[in-house]
Image (cartoon, rainbow, N blue to C red; front, side, top):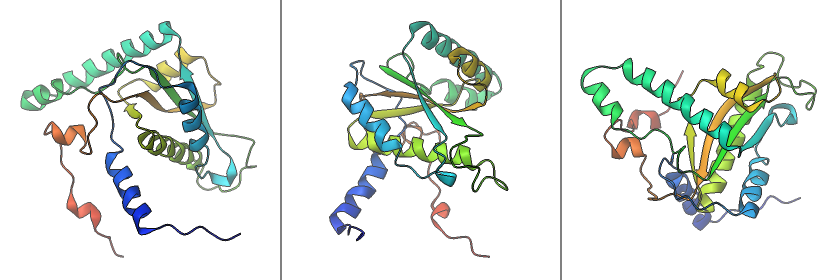
Length: 212
């Protein structure tokens, strides 16, 4: 089999895709068509995984009561995070919108099976956390595919993973890796919102190799 060649035009478009893959917090409420969502999941499953274990588990959270419970947990955790800050740092934090849970038409919880039978343990003996990393790769692949389709994704990390896992009633060995808001963005941008809001900026030193 001959590996396909990728043109210079494709390379530039791929870089554009990476620049526009932003963490979205402001969503339109109209749902993403089911075939589009299913296609994003299928593309996510093209991600690499340790030992071909495919440890990711994508869970659609459609039940209104469960979605509200996640919103409540976010509000609790966010209030606790705000209380841990003071002065201008606290006021800056309070002005940020850190989740799109209210408006996003789709909630997707992504879990990692930490001990899947698939893959027969290959590559996990000395670095068992590679199952989690594989799941993160699938999330990133999902995110890129969503961006290419004009769909926004927001990663909500200000939640208690144990409480949210219990709310969703999944297998005990599954580890919550991400809770995603998914939908069409209200105001697409190629700049991170935290940068636009003045919270943080990119560090050019991160683009340099560290040599040893």
